[in-house]
Image 1 (cartoon, rainbow, N blue to C red):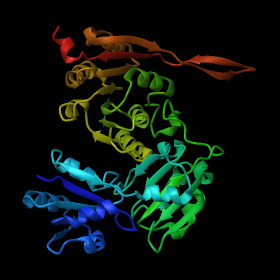
Image 2 (cartoon, one colour):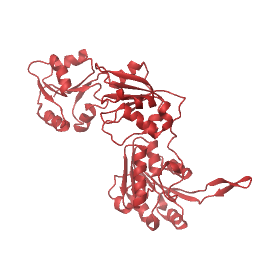
Image 3 (cartoon, rainbow, N blue to C red):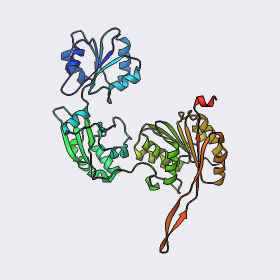
Image 4 (tube, rainbow, N blue to C red):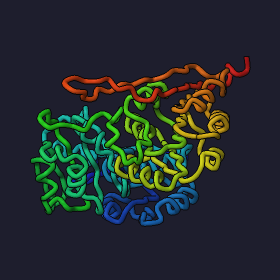
Length: 411
């Protein structure tokens, strides 16, 4: 069977290669505007189907009934960059496709700006109502942000300034309706773009340009306690948080934060590892409300706060690669064993304790899998007369457990 052709175009139309594909197409799918653009290139007998709101179902039906016909799908720009290509790969991963990309909107934008983009960080906020990874964005030397009708370049600029006011002076640019008669490009600062109503368009891109004169958000590692909503000092403090994360070594995959409290450990793990999915569990209603708000403020995707006890959620959550247990009370030993049972082979579990009884549990539970048992003691300088007293805080016990790989378990 012939591979499905996926053809991209920009505002100037189709390339010579794409036009050749269209001339031989018998079955064409695309949005209304792209179908109209392709019409002059088609043979008289070609069947055309408009892709609308029921995109996935229309694609399924068309792929099932195309038979031996030469089928083509139309896309804007590069189909594999925030386009239909990703949908196709998820929908029919074994299908044969041949892609014909055109320049993407961000490539056209940086061409207009005359700015090299090989070191660019890319962010797409299409349909992401609560996502704004402001730390990652503003820490990027150069970034492109795809916006949508609800969150335009102007809105995103304003959100970034709200989250980190020092960013108002950051060099930035916005590009709207690129390649169309209504094209509008403005350069200046984030603060200026946040006030420019001409940037409030559905087809817009925000660029954060290199600027060493403006501060950037701190690396999300051991941030001050005040960075998170919490009550009664019920939070893993910065120094301990940094040590725990160094033991967990978070990367891609799934992490659990059980007895999460403010969620500071899981949030910083997610901030350090863009591909990490974090599930938080907290049973105290007031702390859970603080946790949910902390997740919202960080603006990261892949954060899932769950109200209730660890025992309720351990059987339900996706298998973890990393687990942090920051609470558990008298049930700590059972939580450790239940969580470790679901931990993937090669995974790491870290737990902390303050009370002597909980520390004893860490010293005895899962002893055959424990790789480290340590105490972290922190003393802080406080004024005393004309000098400074180093006042000790409660020591924290940290236990680290590693689950063997399957071949190791079989030895």
